[in-house]
Image 1 (tube, rainbow, N blue to C red):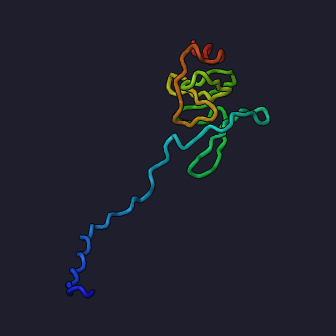
Image 2 (cartoon, helix red, strand yellow):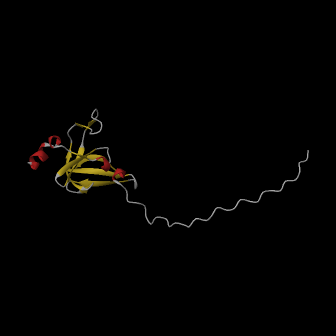
Image 3 (cartoon, rainbow, N blue to C red):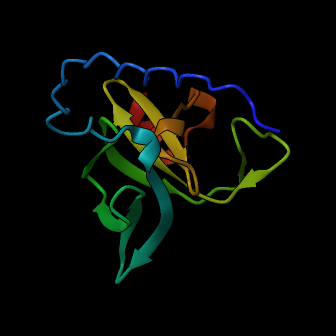
Length: 132
C-alpha cells in the first residue's frame, strides 16, 4: 500500500511585521469606582471615613473637612434611610459632601462613583438649617 510521491508544500510565509508600538508610559489614573467607603466610624470623639483603594489594597482615613470625591466632607449621617437605587433596602449611614452649593451623599459600602445628590428634604436638620 504505497502511495505515489507528493511534493511537500512550501512553508507558509511569516506574517508581515507590524511596527512596534510604544507601551503606554503609565496606566490611566484610577477612577472613582476603585474607591469604596468601608467604614463611617468615630474614633476618640472624632468622626472618620475609611476609604478602601481596590487597586492598591490599602485603606485611608479621612476626617471632617478633608477633600473627597471632588468635594469636602461636612458630615457623617447615621439616619436610617433607603438606598437611592434600592428603596426596599435601608442604609444605616452615609458620608455627606459639599460640592459647590449642593450636598451629595455616598452610602457606606458604595464606591465614590455612587455619590448622589441629596434633595433639600433629605438633608439632616443641621445642614438644612445652614442652607437657609
